[in-house]
Amino acid sequence: MKAGLVRPWPDTTDLGRMGVTPQPGDRMVFKVPSLRNIEHTAPYFHNGAVRSLDTAVVWMARYQLGKELAAQQVAQIVTWLRALSGTLPTQYIARPAGMPASK
Ligand code: HEM
Image 1 (cartoon, helix red, strand yellow):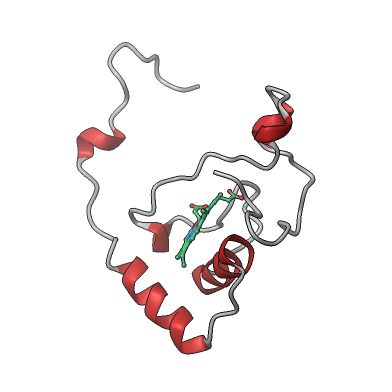
Image 2: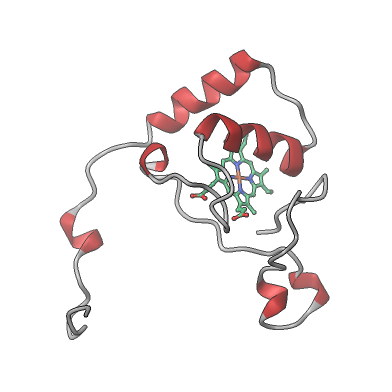
């Protein structure tokens, strides 16, 4: 998905997928990780620029939706994001069959 959909993303050092393809339509397009266990997977975004989940939510609303959230709204969304935490099935993080052990 495109980072900076409504307002320009603050850091364009990495142009995302465009750096690889190089199609203009791929500018600032990044793979978005799953939000499962998001409270445990800081720092956030493609360059790990944001350490707190509150700030990540503020940035999302600002740059992806063009909205400035009230503190209470941020807190409510973060409460919901925390509901996405849980134990990962061990199969999910298992080494794929045939993959050599890392050095
Ligand atoms: C309030 C609504 C939203 C919330 C709570 C939210 C939450 C998040 C979070 C927590 C991340 C960080 C994922 C990570 O690094 O592990 C993320 C990344 C991302 N989200 Fe959202 N998001 C919202 C709305 C949107 C919308 C509307 C779009 C676009 C249509 C969007 C596009 C993206 C993109 C492109 C990234 C990756 C950016 C990068 O890696 O630099 N998000 N989102």
